[in-house]
Length: 113
Image (cartoon, one colour):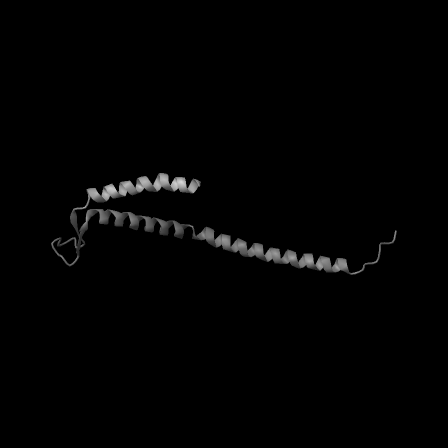
């Protein structure tokens, strides 16, 4: 329930803002990728301005997510290593527990006082 409320409070205003931004910036612009000859139509793209804005935001999000994912690699590697070590120690404990149960099942002579 709380997640739905947060989604409504965040996503609805964000959607309204994006729609308003799209309507306000729908004129066609040309993105020239050739810095030496801007009139070169081979390396240029014409599209509504809001598409370039959205594309810039999406590329920024993807690059930011990739940078965070790459920078946290050492922590993921450490977590995998520690999980493997925990599994090894758990198996060792199970082996000792079963050995102790086996020894307890064998009849040991009662201690003499």
